[in-house]
Image 1 (tube, rainbow, N blue to C red):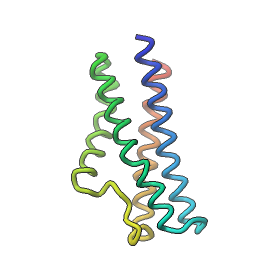
Image 2 (image 1 turned 45 degrees about the vertical axis):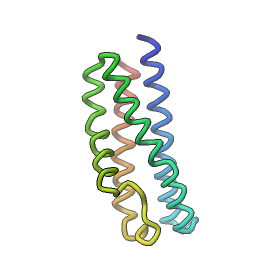
Image 3 (image 1 turned 90 degrees about the vertical axis):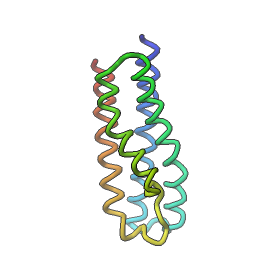
Image 4 (image 1 turned 135 degrees about the vertical axis):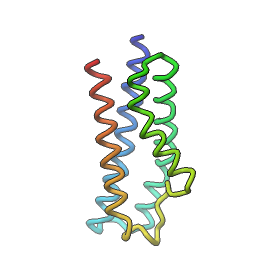
Length: 124
């Protein structure tokens, strides 16, 4: 049981690092510290690993029998699945400035949900 919580903790920390990295790249783009092509390529490199980590975290909670944590993970996993299915998961270089506020809000929502999961896994 301890190994499951340790694995979940490290997966959540790594997931949090990936989402904050994406948010920082968007902030650099907004403040014109980086060009749109570099920012989009940096963010697009870590989107699929983020989705895989979120899926493996949900699978870990499901297989270990932690139903409540699994239920808190499922909405974010479903949202990622819908983005991937609609092919809206990658950032378009030509439209990045038009979509920067929406993309930042997406990442902030993910940060809040991952921090909530991290706090629940720490104090549970």
